[in-house]
Image (cartoon, rainbow, N blue to C red; front, side, top):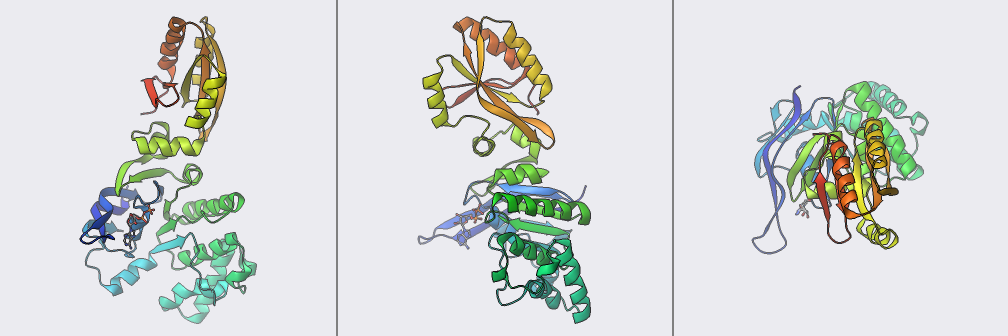
Length: 358
Ligand code: ADP
């Protein structure tokens, strides 16, 4: 597969607040985005996600390294070439960034005007785009007359006007309610599937990543600290920041506060078992738990799906004498990743069994 976007040693520094201080918003990032994928960029606020993505369409210029988009190195491109590039890289935003003085159709027509399309072709294209995003009947409405979801659909139609091969989405669903978010995510999937558009999504909403993206890159302090297929990264996060993001989003493990409550309520040892291959692991767990003088009670957790595969974590209280509990944990660890949980102590990975993915 050919990457449509290649970051090589890319850095972006801004002048900081203090004298002679600099902020390294993006710090030596190497990353490829393959054609036709939906790539999620996640990380806490200030990690550098927006800056990285804005380097792709020349909204920011790097202070080091290179960005290659569709085989073209962006460094040294002149304004005229950047305009050509931008026709090939659409972008949508959290606050939609529509012109309030133009109708939905007027907003969508705008990039076509810039690209010099004659009025008649423009009208046909605008109608086709509004139909594609599902708001044909809103063509003559102004943004103030539209709901958030409709505004984002206008934003998407505008971004697609010049048939870009890449669509950048910067927190595109963060201002929308959950139901509208799902509709917009479905539309992004349709764009990827039907038009073959490569999509890069910045989001702090892990649900967006888990339901939309094929691959994910995790940023912290300007660096990409981890990246790969979404299932691999979520199932087996390598970096502490990634683990925090994954668990906080999936709610599959008790938070510190919940753990303290569970600790007060359950006196046995508490272990979390990662479920990565669903039925097989669960059956093996049940068999193991059956053999011992240990009472296992499920006290937290759930199993859902990620990338169409079972995914989750179950937290058990294991009540019994320490030797028996140790024996159970050792056996569980043969089939799954098991962590003993203690409030305040962080967690300890006891063993990584066959349930691990990588
Ligand atoms: P994220 O999208 O992950 O929240 P950003 O890319 O917006 O992160 O910001 C990364 C860092 O760069 C932050 O510390 C931010 O304050 C800083 N930054 C971003 N844009 C500018 C700018 N135009 N001028 C100065 N600092 C900036």
